[in-house]
Image (cartoon, rainbow, N blue to C red; front, side, top):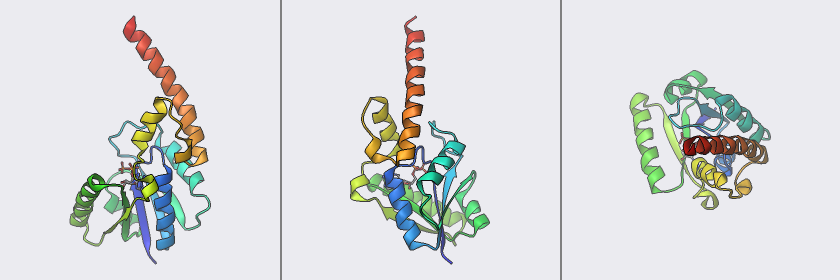
Length: 173
Ligand code: ADP
């Protein structure tokens, strides 16, 4: 049985991530999407929120599960019996970053096989961070997200905009 893991921050999950999950689910017998908690990023959504969002987005894919974990991905892989580590690359910068992570994971556990998927050309420019930046400036990012996640993002956007206005008011006082 070929079991793979797809770890990431998914803050939030975009259609670029979802495309990879669909391709991974066709390739492996089981795919565990792991929402990692040990990210240094300033996230918009809590881990529980992200897990719920991803679960809803992958609901139609029977061989995909959603888990959460902190610590080393290789430890998580041993725990759940995964042999394949799935990641994505949109461009050369991503590839260089991903190949270093793959080499480090291979050093930690030489049984780990990293498979790097090339991004679908229509999502090559798409990252969660750029998407949030555009949303903050009023851009329409709905076509780039699963519907449930777009709704959650619009809600969070309102809260962040209110927070931003309060901060600006305090600074001008
Ligand atoms: P991390 O913080 O671990 O990089 P991300 O959620 O940003 O988590 O990304 C998880 C993985 O998905 C990474 O391998 C990243 O390169 C890949 N990825 C992100 N966006 C896309 C996209 N639009 N198309 C293909 N792969 C992507």
